Structures are given as C-alpha cells and as structure tokens.
Length: 561
Image (tube, rainbow, N blue to C red; front, side, top):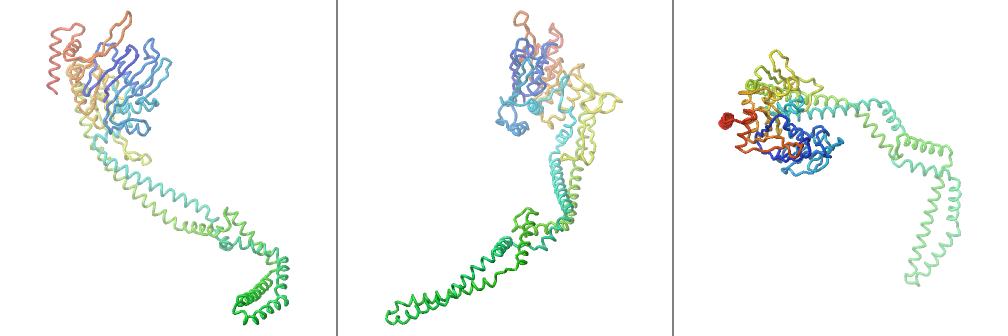
C-alpha cells in the first residue's frame, strides 16, 4: 500500500508529507482547494508524463515521492529483479520524480536513476486512478483475460495450457529444423552423390600423401642413388677386405690355446662383422634391384599425388582427412533416405502436441465462460445501487484464429458494457466518462480487486452528479473494496461517501504571507471529521442540524461495518 506521499514545490504546495494507512482514505475540501494537486503529484511519482507547468512559481524544480510497503513476494520485485535494480524485499519501495522548470525530468526507484518508462511500469503495478484523470488497468483490454482468469481461479489450468503450448511450439520448431535440414540436403544431393562417387573411385588412404611424396622424391633422385649404391656394393664385396678379416680371425683362433679364452670376444666380434657386412651387401643388392628407373612409373606416382592434393583443396581439408570426408558424405546421403521417415514421425508428434494444447485450451475456454457468467451476474448486482440501473455489463469471450493462439489460450476476452438502454455494447473504456465511468469501474473493482492485486486504487469524484442513497451505495462499496487487501483513496464532495472513510483528510487553502496562498492537507480527528461532514452537508455555515445529520451518517456507517 501507499504509506507516504511527499510533495515539494508543486503548484500551491511548497512542502507536504502525508502518511497513509490501509482502508478507505477520503479527501474532502472546497472546490479549488487543490485536491487535484495530490493526484497530479502521485501520478508523477508513479510515471505519468511530466509537466513543467506544475512547478511552483519561483521554484527551480518540483519533487514528488511515493513510498510503498509491499509483501515480500509482490510482483513488483520480480520486475525490479529483471531490471537488475538493488532492493530489499519487504523494505519500503520509494518512487521519486523530479521535474525542472525547463521541462527536464528525472526518475528514481530507491534513489537509483531509472527511465520514466520503467517508473511507469512499476507505477502501473502499484496504483490505479479512476475518474477525470487518465486511467489504465481495466480500461486496457489487454488486461481483461488475465483479470478474468484471476477472478475465476484459473491459474493452474492456465499454466497447464501454457506448458502444452510450449511443448507444441518446441516440437514444431524441431520439425521445422529437420525439414529445413532435409531440404538443404536434398538441394545438394547431386553434389553429394558426385563427391561420394569421386572419392570412392579414388579411394584415398590415411597417410597416402606422405608415402607418395617420399616415393616421388626417391624416383626423382634414382640415378644418383643407384650410383652411390653401386659404389657401396663394390666396396663391401672387395675380396681383399674379406681376406683380411678372415686372416685376422684365423690368427686369433691359432693363438686362442695360449690366451686362455682372452681372444674369444674378438673372434666372435670379427664373425659378427663379416656376417653383418654380408647382410648389408645383400640389402644394398636388393635396393639396387628395386630401383625403378621407369619414367612412366614416376609419372603415375606424381599424377596420384597431385590428384590427391587437388581433392583435398576441393574439400578444404588436409589430404589425410579425405577418408573422413567420404564417410560424412555417405552419412548425409543415407540421412536423406531416413530423413523423410523422421520428418513424418515428427509431424505426427507435432500434431499430438497440437491436439493436446487444443484440448487444454478448450477446457480453459469453458472455465472462462463459467467465470464470465459469474462475474457478469456479480457486476449486474452492483449497477442499480450505483445509479447505473440501465447499464449492462458483459464479458465477451471470442475464439482467436490459430495464428494468434498462445500460452494464455485461444480466447480474446473483453469487458464490454452499455450505460443506456438500446446502446450497443463496447469496451468499457468507450462507454462513459467522468463520474459515471468511475462508478462503473467501482462496480467492477468490488468484484475484481483480489484478482488484479493492485495495492492502491484511487477514485476521483466518483460521486459526481449523484447524492442520497446512491452516494451511500458508493461509499459502502468503496469501504467494502478497501477491505479486500486493497487500499482505496477517494476525492469526494459527498458527505455520504466521506462518512465511510477509515481516514479523513481535508484539503484547504490558506494565505501564509501577503498575497501568497498555499494548499495544506491535514488528517482529521473524530471531532474535526464530524465538523467537516457537517460543512459538506450545510455549506459554509455549519448548523446544529447539519451536525446532527453528520452524526447520523457516521452512525449509519458504523452500523454497516
């Protein structure tokens, strides 16, 4: 609820701090006393369009601040969290607006600078004004569906519908992606088949590029290699080397009987050397025999190597990854055949999800129709006592085309009304103006306050052009509304309405200096309140009869409570 309103330099108010409690707060005062300034100030603090003409004469700027006390789980805190604003849930929430004479405006939430649009968003969740000033909330048809759902207690069914809708949309997105991928693959099917055929015929092997490159290098230097191998072979097959090694071995064997085994390692080493030399000579002989001097063989190797590298460039990979490219192309071709089956499966699953959503949305629609009938009956019962006996209220539920179905269901909900017999039904924002509309909104609010959960409601001169029993009916409903976890502020010229207030404030002008008039607001005690209601009944001259009438009104109010 609104706990404090602080006003600085707004028109005729230099400084004003008003503390509020729950229940019905009434504001009275003579015409022109400045009651509208309070609404202007509260509207500015909660995000209304700034107006530099409200700055007091001689002041450089005005400042309006509205302090709210809210439950810890209020939806306002969810909005602040989304905007990454610092706050402590359960602590006072302070909205402040500063407007300078040059028209510049600044907005603050808990002394953190914010945009005017964010301030308005927060303000829309905290206060709603009905009467001669701009009105939002129920006059916006976009809110009607949520309000009806709240009134009918349809949150669980609405959440179930939302889950079904999201499952349907997720499945639709999955199907659309697969369809897009399949269409893309089909568009490049010819290219894929060409790639597979080309790669299969070429049959690239892992490590083949290195092998071909080495063979090519070997062939290009075959003549030099052959010359060197022949020289090495001749050196190893030199008879004098073999004779020398064998002669050394025989000499050591002849001396072995004297050496007591000391020469055996040398003899064994010479044997190994001769054996290894023979093996090396044989290997060189093999290499010489394997040398390919055929230019056609070299040309074939080069052709294979160059073709391999060309394929790698074509697919923008390293040559050793060409086998992977072949595997991937084969997989994508296979998926074309399987993709059609998967697409059919997903289409069936999507339709199942769609039918599930349609069923939950149908159940939600039926529940809305029942809630609408209940609401229409409840509002109709409130109209006659508020001097709106010829008015008609109707909750219109219209089926939306499938393109507009959403997580909230398949219905469009509009609160429509007509205030006169024979008048066509129209959205409530278009049916009336001023006090008549305010009374109509009062009839709605009495039934919808708990569903909307707006902390503070303001009715400006809801008693316009009425009196007697109708004014008492208005006051009674305002008081009833204020008991529904809702704070109600009303500006009134009706003594009957004022008598229902739990708190009574008087707005009055006074001359503080020569020629300087200021507006002041004071909360009245019981005696002052009796005198104010008597003034409202009799005019400027309060009589004992008007005081007695005031006592009777206050007594009647107490009895009705």
